[in-house]
Image (cartoon, rainbow, N blue to C red; front, top):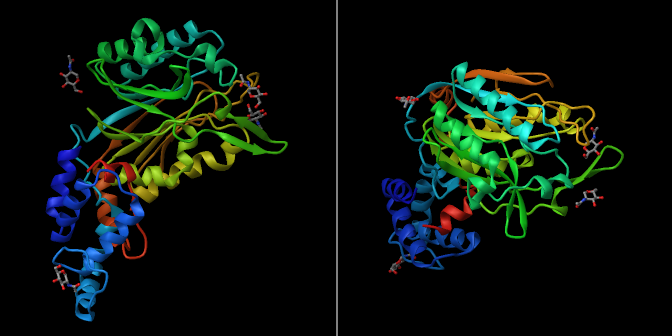
Length: 370
Ligand SMILES: *[C@@H]1O[C@H](CO)[C@@H](O)[C@H](O)[C@H]1NC(C)=O
Ligand SMILES: *[C@@H]1O[C@H](CO)[C@@H](O)[C@H](O)[C@H]1NC(C)=O
Ligand SMILES: *[C@@H]1O[C@H](CO)[C@@H](O)[C@H](O)[C@H]1NC(C)=O
Ligand SMILES: *[C@@H]1O[C@H](CO)[C@@H](O)[C@H](O)[C@H]1NC(C)=O
């Protein structure tokens, strides 16, 4: 990623170049001070920091800033989406019923992935917490130490094996992960070689309280992840979020700025938030960022402690619902065509129209790693 970043900075203005070297020298700097410095540097084109600027320098800066305004709306500047290995392929969303029997859940998921691949899916997505009931009491019992190897993690062992056997990419929904004395809600991505390509730990924990409707505090048992996850796969550059992560539009914007073509959110909304927000949020993330969004929920079990809304869905870059389902078990197969992203972005060139002089999205980690 680093090389790509440097390249994109090179192709932008001289000002950015000077900036990049200055950022590289100091390892971590708060975003705000970076922005202030950036402002001064824009004012003084020779690149050195000067607190006071003359009127003529300001005039130069004004015309420069309107030219580069859209580019400045993403800090660091947005990366172009890479040319995907394939532009058209089928995605499979496996909306599975989850039981208290973990072994059965693993076998069941395996069968569903096989069926999706048989129907032509090159990318298969599983639901949030597919190997365990969705309850904070179950998380510690069903949790697996993913980093300790397949002996300690039968769920990911299955995902790796089946990805390799079927020659597909799997976004493995999520399972409770044990790491030291901590528990995470974790999504593993496996490539067609069976290798773990990425691991996303849910960043935003689900702590909500709507009196009389729903109270759930994931943070009682789980720890939040610390990094956004974006991964280059055989089927494009994919950003990962888990359930509640979908509510935070900044994360989706950040993935788009890093060149994502698709964002996958395994998720389990419930009967209160599902009908109100599930589709709305997915369409919002897709249409704002002009990319594909895929979600995968567990099937509804009315007898479960947590009743999932279901309705796994694929949304296109124009905010259109391309495929969806009700609440029963289902395997959705639908086509993703990345040329649609190009088309929408050409028709509606939001990327070039942003007002970086009025607002900016700062990718804090990408900035401090430069
Ligand atoms: C810009 O920086 C150079 C070098 O430090 C300095 O000589 C010049 O006066 C500065 N210009 C402005 C407009 O601040
Ligand atoms: C799970 O959450 C419920 C309600 O928020 C709480 O009463 C219970 O103690 C929690 N269980 C664990 C294991 O944290
Ligand atoms: C795996 O699939 C890719 C296309 O997605 C194909 O090019 C490759 O030949 C396949 N590999 C095997 C071992 O079937
Ligand atoms: C939503 O989930 C919570 C927590 O599991 C549950 O107590 C509540 O009954 C659910 N609400 C609805 C409307 O399903």
